[in-house]
Image (cartoon, rainbow, N blue to C red; front, side, top):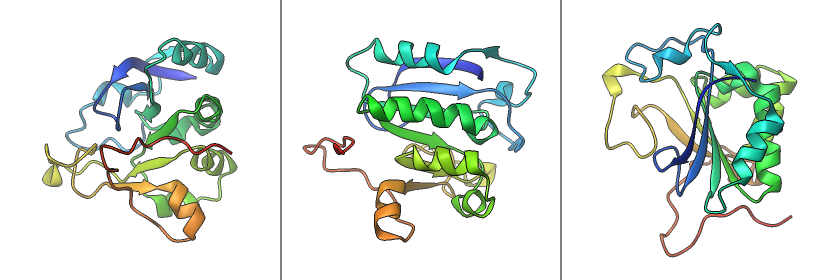
Length: 175
């Protein structure tokens, strides 16, 4: 898996303390992107899913895995494998993408479907400089959506994620 960076204790890439993997390579090249160094597929360094999963396990305070970019769906097979491992650890998985949810499900790409299936919350849509916002919760621009994929799968209709009551902890339900 080609990654640009790992942040082991992010508090800005979803709720709680998160292990964030920034994938390398992005076809979107959004003007004003804050991760322009992740665009070229030639950059970054190789890490295995096993290495990242072992690193993820080390901090017992970690509440979730966030896959960011670059574009995680460019490495969907590896990202899905890591997301499944995180789910097995009881962690909540967030995935950021410049694609829209509709584009991803229309793509009929089995690796994309696997990553969507292993993701709890999808932050979708390209970063739009003209809609940049410092107050948009966990997003860079107002057009991006926080999609609760758990609820979407359960209800069969796209459902937006909303911040849970701070007194109720947002965790992966046991299977």
